[in-house]
Image 1 (cartoon, rainbow, N blue to C red):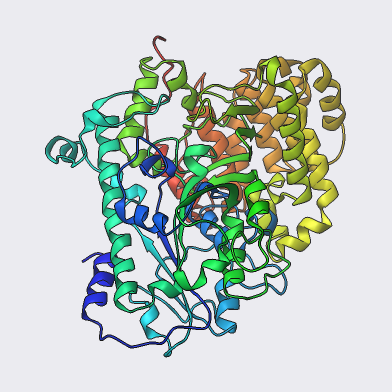
Image 2 (image 1 turned 120 degrees about the horizontal axis):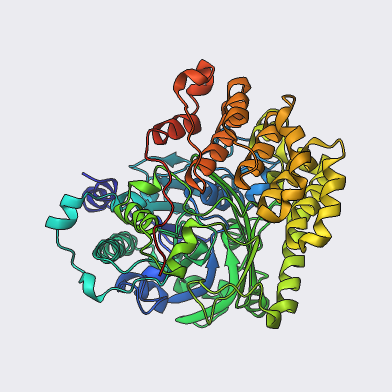
Length: 624
């Protein structure tokens, strides 16, 4: 029996407990896993019908611009629980290498509700990257419900729905051949960046079936609230926990990975806390940092100053001001064993994507992603040269910055960053995002292994102490955005200096320029030869390998042997996989015996070792 089935059985068999109306609103969060706005007809003409969610919207508000700040579960849920940006408080990596403490004096928001007299229940996913504390939930389990509260006690209840999780698409070829979908595969929309094949059509159809199942499960919870006589005392938030879940959705900082459905049903008794017409669609931008503060505000609980978000409902909130909000910030770092560093800024109709390591192409191996037949087929078709230019983008190096007009190009396949007509927009978005990462300050400009060693006992304090150093690293990384003729001299200065992490970023920037940076290869070779700083050595070897000036195997394997950290080894292995899977395709002899015993137990290392038994890179044989 599934978790949701257990809950539904509970709602039928539990004895009814009469309650009188609370003097404060109840708040319920119903969270579907792994779906963006693109899969619900209420938000997208190509989506599946969701009549129960649409009924919530008819008696509430639809938010057309709601965003997860991160495109993956643990990071997104930690953002929800804390109301804080992950790269500021050290919770940006999925899966966590260590659980970090919350900012000094701060709690996860349900604990503030509990302290104010609310009954808090979670059914049942947590998945936090921060240490939650002992008093977040009265109960967090598969049996948790609002029905265990005291008579008349207001409640906050959260339930997750896994029926549409990514794992639901980990079916076999035999299943695809024998199990029919309720949705006709011939009728589904296939995104322009996907190949239009039977596999992608079946996967699309199967997922839309899951969305319809999820909708019915949402409705069952609403029915239970109605049966208990508390529906009109209760705000119901329905939303997706981040985007997804077909290829290039979950795990990628783009519209498909970040833009989530959000509907809030407003109870009759508390309509004055919404101050907007029921059934209306709201255009103002809200993101996950805002959800906790909004819930606290609806409950009449003060929002802690340490939170980054702002309420969008409740006392003291101007709906005119909310409608004027037009920005959302996104981040993508590590997803299991796959590293990246991407920051995004959606402002109005424009989405600006800053790829700080653009050579780390999107399709770089992630074992969990490639369990899906569609992912496997997509890569196979790329290697066979059977994809068009839009479909190939996923497997090729990205520009350092991208700019998309989401209204004209909702699937983000036309990069406007090099179009002179958008030069002013590009510069404005670039400046805004740079200011944001410096202001946080963004901890990810240090490698994760350094943060584990030196920062994660108090990430916020570390960020404040090293804010100037982080700003300088951002400036070095932003040399990627200059013409090579202007960047070269600055990179020489940095490479000739003594700051380890600025040198690290200068080498990353050299890799971003590719063949243009060949004149700096002799300087990089000096860092590849040294053994003092393993990650600097690896970034030098990576650059020299990508431009074909020096075979990287000896340098990379030497750094792995000397690594004393599983997190550092995982970073090194990311570079190894990149060099293996992109042209010219270097072969590496790697085994478990290469590592110290404790390092081989690291989850990232184990995942990479699993993959390294796979086939070598093959260049596309032709192009369309």
